[in-house]
Length: 107
Length: 107
Image 1 (spheres, rainbow over the protein chains, first blue to last red):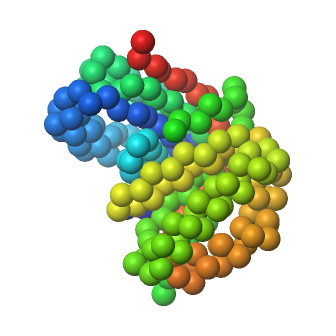
Image 2 (cartoon, each protein chain N blue to C red; image 1 turned 180 degrees about the vertical axis):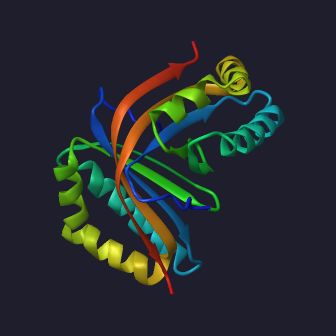
């Protein structure tokens, strides 16, 4: 689903990854858990995700401080380590300040 | 593929969409053409794309001026109109300034 984010400015974390073939079920379970957990964090505004060859997850946050706290969340840290050890071949994380947004909806 | 972007700052256009079932082949052809065209634009730095229920395309640009020119490109304008008429149920475009990036690669 497309996130119903507030008017900018706010922040986006663009996480782009290529996965290994290791422990696909474990990954899916963890990804779902992390999504449930992210939603509960202070400053969380939304999350959008899609995967083909490459996976793109964009999460939206109120400010840099919210992102920093989420990055350091204990359960999330565990998932990050497991991701580097097993699930991800390569990834890039980009932190960006959303300055403008506009939406279209077909009537 | 994950884009090999330069050191920040630079800009990201996060385009998230849900498609209709209309003219799926025509959409695929146009999406491919627009990707080929985007790569040729001044200030283009990279493009990442994935689709399941929701499609996420993130393109990276040197500055806001490059994004503005790409938005106003004649062929791209035609594609945008066709997208609103036929292909997209809903979309959100977010323009964001990338401030930080870090990558991981498994050795």
